Length: 83
Image 1: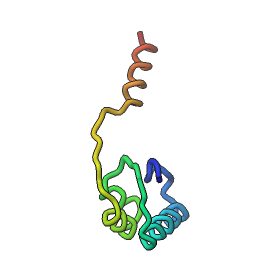
Image 2: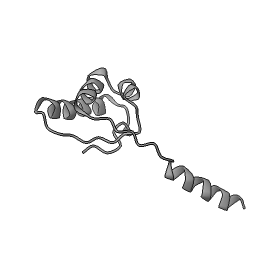
Image 3: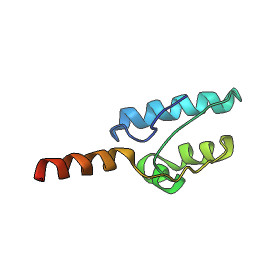
Image 4: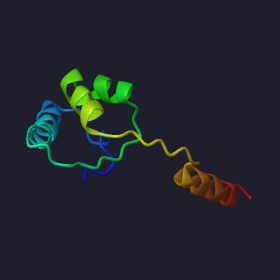
């Protein structure tokens, strides 16, 4: 399981390690669960087409559209501070 994929810094090292991990799972036909806040288009821009295409083939996309809990907490804290 890879949690918050795409949240890491966009370095050559991170891109290569991500590709190696995903490609290894892809070639061995092993299951993988990935969570991300990025769309497939955003993943391709951040990483590479090779990563995006493997993920698109391997994974089922499930979109969970909810409010951002952290933004709500930040807004509450901000209004408490100002009041």
